Image (cartoon, rainbow, N blue to C red; front, side, top):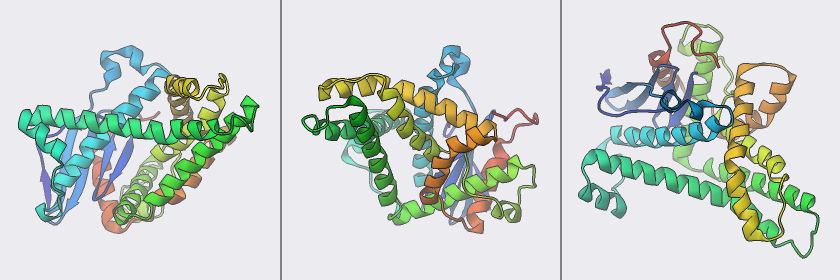
Length: 317
């Protein structure tokens, strides 16, 4: 059984890639975006045409600049997809809204309230990521000012701390039961995209045989950000920890931009250089993906079919 909602109900903004949800998958192609969620009644499908911000403001599609734009856009899309996924679950499994969400819903009409809640969620998510993965390592390294005097050594220590905090965060996430299912859907997403990229019919049997480690992956991108930050932050050095933190924030869009171009390169070509670029992220995917069951592959296949472009080859990076 499959239900299909009208395009006006929910809009999604995210070449073909996807995002795993607790009980579904969101896929984005060059023309369309779709989310498929498995519910007790069957598959719930949501489709929409893609509206890229770079089409309205071409400068936002330029190399380096497009990295931060696409990162924020993917976060907005992710929050929307998660919200829709949660709404599709049985009422007894849905969490009660928090006080802030209740207050916003009372003050604003539904569409405006949704936009506000999404904006707040994205803002809080970005702030927490910056504090945890960028500023915290800077503060901890600042404690060594009286012991370590070399800016190069301090930058290396800071980079190692940043990677360790990130890996620790990902490892802790794997211990949550709901996240384990997200990792399975993540694996289903990768396997299905691999099957499509190889030109094979999109069947559960063909997808099941594919690898679950994909070079063009969000977790690979995040790990690249950690590595690239070591190189970019080495360009400027300052002893004062507050100035160092300010510089980290100012340089972050450049770090994200370079990382995006590298992940894009790795997704387009297969050679020794791109394999080296992809290697750390693929290793990390041992944590962030799990082998999916056939029902998860069915969801991924349905989502992918909805976003395949009519013009063959138009989805190449």
